[in-house]
Image 1 (cartoon, rainbow, N blue to C red):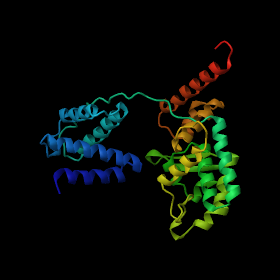
Image 2: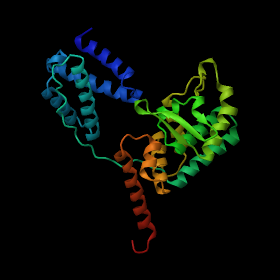
Image 3: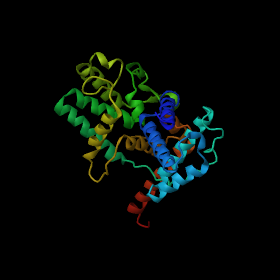
Image 4: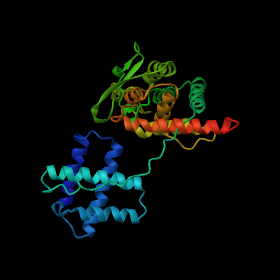
Amino acid sequence: MSSFENVQVEYTRYLEKERNLSEHTIRAYLGDLESFLSHLEMQKVDDVASITIAHIRSWLANQQVKGGARTTLSRRAVSIRLFTKWATKKGYLTKDVGATLATPKGHRTLPEVLSVVDASTAMDSLATRVAEEETPLSKRDCAIVEVLYASGARVSELCGLDLDDVDYNRNTIRVLGKGNKERTIPLGGPAIKALNDWLKNGRPTVATDKSARAVFLGSRGGRIDQRTVRTVVYEALSALEGVERMGPHALRHSAATHLLEGGADLRTVQEILGHASLATTQIYTHVSTERLQKAFKQAHPRA
């Protein structure tokens, strides 16, 4: 095993055990590191101790030449800075060469958001499917979409829900967010109803010895995975006319936007979404403003 391979194994363990990152983020960071190390090998660099800021900049420049988007370059810069910081702490580098690396500013795009009408249509369609099919998985799928839209939870948070995290007395769920931060999120009547229907009339049929305390299960009885949740949401939203392909994050964006449009303050939405910074939540105010302007131009005679 080469020097780089040893470091990769150790760094992978660090990301998985100590950083509490999602599987998606870990895959992205490790992919960035693999690309960077391949670039170093082409530069005849075969030892972490020999890495310089010039190597990092030449790698990023090479990515840009290949057509990498600014948002991708920005993430890769963050990814490599995290690696050099870790490598310095572990003694592989004598100096954190990535600390001075500037992050390319990505063009911040407004998130995709469903209209209130489209969101209601999607929920009604799922409820109709449950009534027609009366299958355990149709009940599960309805509960998944209702809970995601009601709570604004991340997919990873939904997959991690245990039975003890559902509080019917207060109509809330308890989720474990980024950095192992726990928060409680209220649910509305339709979401509670769909969740209760799944837990009472659907889950017991699917549950096996490997189900443990998981709220949402896959077809074979184990805890549901993120890929399955994404498929469920894609299919639920695909029936909407004029709506581009949207996944679970669109439901999170929609929940935040609809809360703000309904009069919720930024701090409340920040707590519900589990954002560390209020600045992250503020992007939804821009979404609401843009939607208001569009409605104004369509409806006002002097627009």
